[in-house]
Image (cartoon, rainbow, N blue to C red; front, side, top):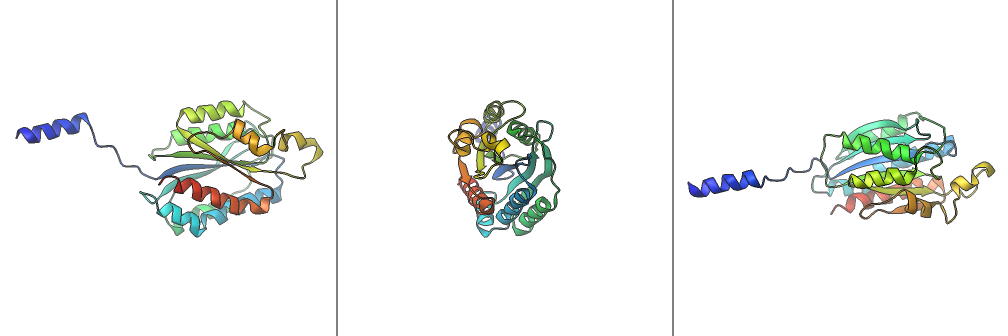
Length: 233
């Protein structure tokens, strides 16, 4: 009887940790500002579709302790133009992955304004904080072709996300032939990938992948997702 009582007391004092609902909570946040033309926008969405129908990404998802991730897709342009395009979806198999990919592909473009990376981060973070799911890791993926030129500083939004335990990774799309009016925006001193490292990304294991052609977006995103998901193990 005494042993049973001690066991009950130990359980009350040290409750068993609740199992995670998913292995990863992942926000895909894409730049749809005016420096991204409609062809490039379509290539971004085609890249997401290709990544989520890739055997490599699906194997990474199913290889986790839970075998599932929660993912949502957001777009941003100016400070008032950040939108939740596809809300949180559980991906655990080829059917759910293809359903999410098809929803992203079918969604119309949400904006064409300036570039507020901070607005994209802020929206993704608020959505994560309101999500009734638990995971050992939360990641915001920012994909864009330029610096933050509207809204509050990207570093402020980044620091707020890091304070909430969120990791931010980046996919810096290098525009090697920018319009003259946008040169400084897409080609900052030291390169856009280094600007992302200094101002956007952060957290344990964070990284930036630089690509020089929108045609490479699908492969880069596939490698990025597989790395993020596999890093849980």
